[in-house]
Amino acid sequence: MPPNPKKALSIVEPAATVDPGRSTVIRIAGLSKRFLTARGEFEALRGIDLAIGEGEFVCLLGASGCGKTTLLRILAGLDRHTDGVAEIRAAQLGQPLTSVVFQEHSIFPWMTVWDNVAYGLRARKLDKAFVRERVDFFVHKVGLASFARALPHQLSGGMKQRVSIARAFANDPEILLMDEPFSALDEQNRAILQEELLRIWSDTRKTVVFITHSIDEAVFLADRVVVLGGPPGHVVMDARVTFARPRNAYELRALPEFGALVADFGAHIKAGVNGRR
Amino acid sequence: MADDDRNRATSDADGLVRLPADPDIGQSARRRARLEKVLGILSPLLILVLWEIVVRAGLLDARIVPAPSMILETFKSLIESGELARHVGVSLTRVFVGLLLGAMPGLVVGTLMGLSPMTRAIVSQIVASLYPIPKIAIFPLVMAIFGIGELSKYVLVAIAVFFFMAINSFAGVANVERIYWDVGRSFGVSRFRAILTIALPGALPMILAGLRLSLGVSLLVLVGAEFVGAKSGIGYLVWNSWQVFDVESMYAGIIVIGLLGWAFFAMLDELERRLVPWAPSNRR
Image (tube, rainbow over all chains, first blue to last red; front, side, top):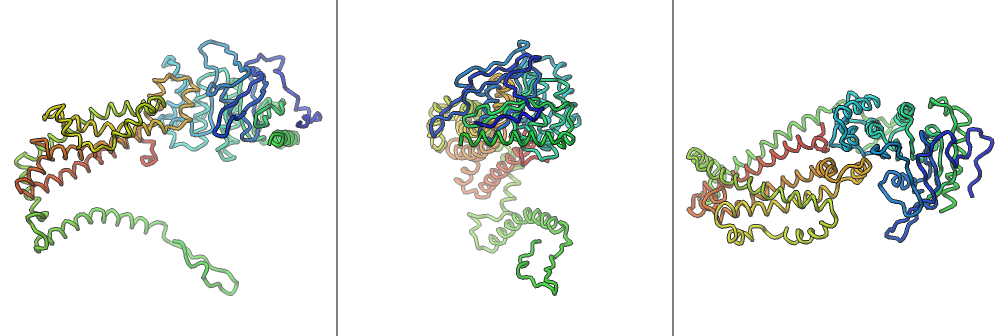
């Protein structure tokens, strides 16, 4: 069994349930995923229970191979679970349930920045004027207005991920799913994009499920961190991070609580890996 | 320039090995590039000059290998009489009509193979076994079915082109990165839209490579067909000239085939630059 979260840290509270003030937008109960591989049956996820409230910024944290991407793909509708329940609340019929920001190389190299951002909206055959206004807004919002007509190969890695983020936000889904969107970036770019993401998110207050293997990133971004262990993937720890927003990257990281929290999550991840391998 | 002798260099009294500086900031590389360009033009000219000398010196039988200057004379008269233009026009029509007839179905079948594993399972063995048959070998059959007129040439070119386009567009579509399909699915796009916005643009570099191969092979097949089953066209010009021992005209015909192939490649280069600006070789 992994150790209990340190009670002494007031910023960490067990968060097995959704805040009383929030309505549930994702409900996962007893979810498992198995599939056949060349070496036989593989259990990727086992008995996941998770409820996520509206507007929460949740980071799924875990070592590679613990099934966090599998869980995200199930929420995105790209994979199906084998057992259990996964539900997403639809506020409005016709509105997309999820949009995904993938790791990297996910923007289409044959489309301009603008066309990439418009992709989801055009697929929904929305009114042209509406699409134009919305795409212009988000292209501007991620600071790529002067690159709207550029092709992706003319952009840096950080700019490409901005396109991917704009594409997902522009689609206006119930939930934003992000699969290690900054993992391929250098540290300076990552820090800049993390702050930008928080800025855009604070304007829209979308529910975000953000996958990362960086503890630092999870603690900086999240309202709540869910640590997965495995394989098979299971929830090792579920805790709230209550640092005030807006968060400043350097001030926050200078706090002793920040370091303590990072160390604590690290210990849980290690326990989650050791327990199964 | 890297100094290969750094490990054998002698040190001064301090035991310090001095690393050599290089004032060349890229001038020599630029000079070399210019030289390469000049050599690329000079080398074919040099061969022509050598050829001329060897023939004039009587080292080669001018009845079988005429000198370039003699071929040039014939070339001029073929152009002036309009005969060359007629043959080239006939052959080009056959190439482009055949290309159109073969490329479209090839693209459709190849794309379907790339999209659907079921189609692939059904079609791929058939394609794999028909593709290596030399298309000129079935020309008698094609003539028997489609007659000795133009149609049989169109069909033969179309058959040859079909396989190149099918195989290349299949490879192109099948190798579109999985993440692009995931993006499409995550945005809930329709199958038709996914083909238009993901499969075809993703496969476009391979499709254009298929078109390039197709143009080459259609010349190859057509010249063969015109040898035996035509009364016009560039292949007919070559074969007929040989039959009447008009060797200079034969050479003129061969050179024109080479020039056509070169022109096709230049065309495809330009097409690729325009249609696939994101391909690594076209980036600027």
